[in-house]
Amino acid sequence: MSNEQLKAYLEITFPTCKLENTIDFPVLIVEKNLLFATMLQLKENPTTLFDFLFCQTAVDYLSRFELVYHLTSTTFRHDLVVKVILEDRDNAEVASVYNLWNASELYENELFDLFGIRFTNHPNLRRIMLGSEWPGYPLRKDYTDVNILIP
Amino acid sequence: MGVNEDNLNNFPGEVYKDETGKANFMVTNIDKLANWARSNSLWPLTFGTSCCAIEMMSTASAKYDWSRFGFEVARATPRQADLIIVAGTICKKMAPVLQRLYNQMPNPKYVIAMGACAISGGPFYYYSYTVVKGVDTIIPVDVYIPGCPPRPEALLEGMIALQTKIKKSRAYVVDSPKNEKE
Image: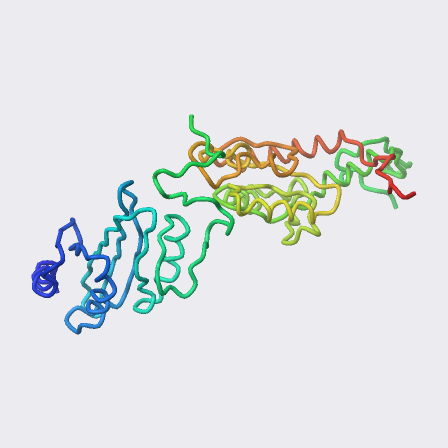
């Protein structure tokens, strides 16, 4: 499907979700509670078949987190960005998509490590880059550390 | 059978020749002899953590060829190396590994801090939560080579400076630390 066709399809299929457009990918903004169901449908539905999660990351806006999922389909070669907004920044928690794409195991470990976002139903949520005793989450905008030098 | 004088690379001492013009015997002291041998056969550990390591590999390869100065036997184990060139950024997770590698090297051992990252943290000095700000906060450093990364000529210059330093040092320390029970 082309981006326009995909957008038209998504508008009909997910009427509650907001649709946006970037330069290259359509963006689907999903409710936090509906994330897993929406992802499951996007992956399993034979018209979309998003079977490849090629990037998963988060953005800190100080008032909220935005989780960003980049999906592509190896069958149809179309791409989609799915965003989830987490309003509760201190207790950010969202469903893991590990059961849909195994690649998300390490992505979610990294997000937990650097942003402190917890994923329910993740098989082994742990810090992978920093030591297990590291205090705080360095990629948060309000992170401070006594060793950081600022000129 | 004498020693051909061409093979005596700046021998620190007096060389006595026989009537055929070959070196017959040599007089020197043991410190100078040991330093002469050590400085001309430094075995570097192959340890590189980032872009400086590319320059280090270039220095080892044919164009710059550090074998000319006696560094040819790069070792992949710290047990057989006596020089570690810290080529690259050392992050906090790498620091204990570097420290252990240094501890595993047999004495005498020498350290070259190559490039801005190894000297002070370099481009990661400010705003960084991961980078060790200077490798001399972990292990003692003999020679610092500035640059980002230093050119192979600069690395060779630093290694020759280390050789000069070794040649001027005491090879054998007489009063080594004694066991307290004795």
